[in-house]
Every structure is written in C-alpha cells, then in structure tokens.
Amino acid sequence: MEKKLSNKVAVITGGSAGIGLATAKLFAAEGAKVVITGRKLDALNNAAKEIGHGAIAVQADSSNLLDLERLYKTVNEKFGKIDVLIANAAVYILSPLANFTEEQFDKQSNINFKGTFFTIQKALNYLNDEASIILLSSIANTKAMPGHSSYSATKAAIRSMGRSFAVELLPRKIRVNVMTPGPIDTDVLDQVTSTKEEASSMKAGMAQFTPVKRLGKPEEIAAGLLYLASDDSKFMLGAELILDGGIMSL
Ligand SMILES: NC(=O)c1ccc[n+]([C@@H]2O[C@H](COP(=O)([O-])OP(=O)(O)OC[C@H]3O[C@@H](n4cnc5c(N)ncnc54)[C@H](OP(=O)(O)O)[C@@H]3O)[C@@H](O)[C@H]2O)c1
Image 1 (cartoon, rainbow, N blue to C red):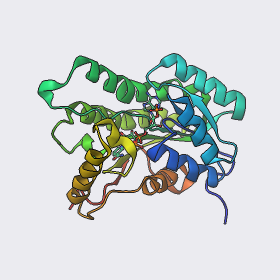
Image 2: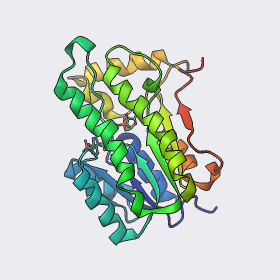
Image 3: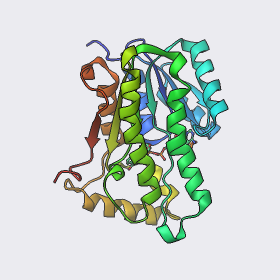
Image 4: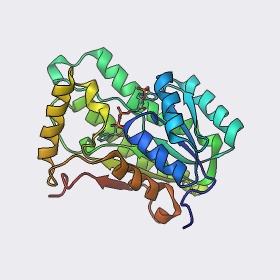
C-alpha cells in the first residue's frame, strides 16, 4: 500500500516523548523524513534511535526564538523545505488560582502560547506551499477544570491561532488545523504529581471522567495527526479535530 507521507519533511516539536514520539514513529513508518525537538538531549537521542528511518533530533526550546531559527536552518540544510509541522511542545502546570506564581505563569505562557506562535512564524520561510500545520490544543480550551486556568488559557490561545494562521496562510495553500485531545496516557502527569502512585491515581480518576472509561493512547492521537498531515484532510482548514473519548459531547 502507498505510504501517506512518502518523502515529506515533517518537523514535530516535543517529539521525544508521549504524543510527539508516537507521531514521529508513525510518520517515519509512513515515509516521512522526521525531525524532532525537545530540551533534554539524552531523551532526544534515545527517541531518534527508537524512531529510526533516519530521523534526526535537534535540541531546541520552543520558547527560545534563536533555538527555533537554528532548528529551521538545520532542517533546511539536512532535508530541504518542510511539508508537515506539528507544534506539539507544551508544559502542563496546574495550581489553584490563589497559589499560581508569576514564574509558573510565565513559563507556561512562554512555552505553550508564545512558543507555538513563534514555532509557526519562524518556520514561514522554510515551509513548502501546500504544507500542513497542526497545533496541539486540549479539551481544556473550552472545558473548565479546577487548577487549569493558566494551562487552559494557553490552549484556548492555540485554538484561536489555528483559525488566524489558517486565514493568513490560505494564499500559500498552507492548511492549519488544531488537534484537541482529551486525557491521553503519557508521562505528562509526572509534571503535576510527586510520585508514580499519585500519577496513577490521577490517571484512574481521569479515565473514570471519560464516557469510554479509559484514557486515550498516544497512538490514537498520532493516527488523527496523520489524517491532518496527509492529503486525506485536504478539505479541512482552520478546524479542530477533537479526540476525547466523548467528554465534550456525551
Ligand atoms: N497527555 C494529555 O492528556 C494531553 C491532553 C490534551 C492535550 N495534550 C497536549 O498534547 C501535547 C503533547 O502532550 P504529551 O502528553 O505528549 O506531553 P509529554 O509526554 O509531557 O511530552 C512533551 C514533549 O514536549 C517536549 N517539550 C516540553 N517543553 C518543551 C520546550 N519548551 N521546547 C521543546 N520541547 C519541549 C518534551 O521534551 P523536553 O521536556 O525534553 O523538552 C516532550 O518531548 C502537548 O501540547 C499537550 O498540551 C496532552
């Protein structure tokens, strides 16, 4: 069967773990030349090996504009122009409104909101016309949950940018869409819990919260991202694909 991303150049920020890593593996298996980013070098190198198919890793912090410029120059030198860009890197910082610090707010905004904005802006000269861009949001972009106000606002900003970028990039036939996952079984909860037991119990609570009574798998989000990245979704732009086990509708 023909591969969906044969010879396409795909950049996935935050590709060393979770959804980004599952997506990198799927895209590479579908014929893409994959580039992943992240801040931790060891994790990146291990991920690149796991992905195989000649995937490369570039250490780059999405909130750092110089890192983004270096990333795109490297991709261009190595593989040429970009066909698929997944702005996936984000952090998950939760705390009650009363306790949220300025430092936490700045970190989350810088990576999730500013980072996503400049991940796209700095890529503009390196994207092929007709490229596909996908921004990772979350059901938190509309669903209110305690402790989530800062995270949710960054994800609502990302949903909004998906529409604005889509209209601005229409003349180049570059499609921009947003992926909106519900709770997915990754290590993201390690950022908001102090022990593995606490993370497991939080995951169990989230699973009960979904109509399907389970967390989503990173591979299920990767499959949706493949649809958005490939020509199968040619008629879709400025839109949102919600993969949430039914939370938002049931
Ligand atoms: N898991 C969920 O339940 C869920 C639900 C809804 C939406 N999402 C969204 O889906 C995306 C992926 O989530 P995930 O669960 O796969 O997260 P994850 O397992 O925590 O992985 C996050 C990835 O992003 C990288 N990263 C974090 N900050 C970065 C930065 N400043 N620059 C570059 N890379 C950075 C991490 O590597 P380093 O730490 O080495 O930088 C890692 O590779 C995020 O946008 C998240 O908000 C997740």
